[in-house]
Image (cartoon, rainbow, N blue to C red; front, side, top):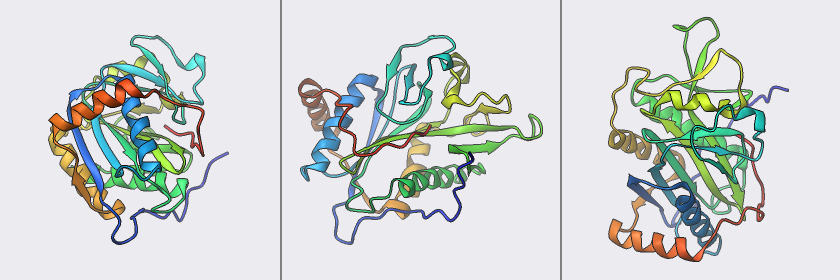
Length: 266
């Protein structure tokens, strides 16, 4: 069945006077297990009212993740480590040149509406890509952000950004993966997001002829985020933040069974 997503509402700003979400950019490649541990612990602290919301931008080493709807047949060749992810969705790829955004927002402070949250993430990415003159859009039957490719043939389109989330205690986890300049051949080891239609591929800014740097993409992401979700503040300086990461990594582990609600996507 095609999921018609007409009349979507975009934007999830917190109430006036609420603390601004923190914004953190990691320049180094972050191991997937480490990122999950930090994200899980931070989301728990947000739910308890002990930490600000956080948007964390990073890159991972080459790897595949399997969401809750992934099927073994969609793993064509395990060219890289495969991780079981707590997010909704199927198989996806992460690697250098791809900007991954982990978005930890408290929907109780904004709007307890998962559908609206996903639509707002899509809109955020669409506006970010527009800053580089890339026309993209959402599809009624597929979560994510797509670019039409008439140069490849009639009806062809490529996915440039994947979205996969989890919501626990109304705090969001995971987020999006935007292809800036990854090695697109690495996607060949999986059926990306379970979409086997030969007319549906993957692309990147570089593949589309846009030579944007990762810092330039980060600036555009922040500029597009704030009109939809509200103001942000810089997170702790790297030295202090790295201590927090180390402490979190040693004292927490992913807890994948405590799910308030979950949206299958990517």
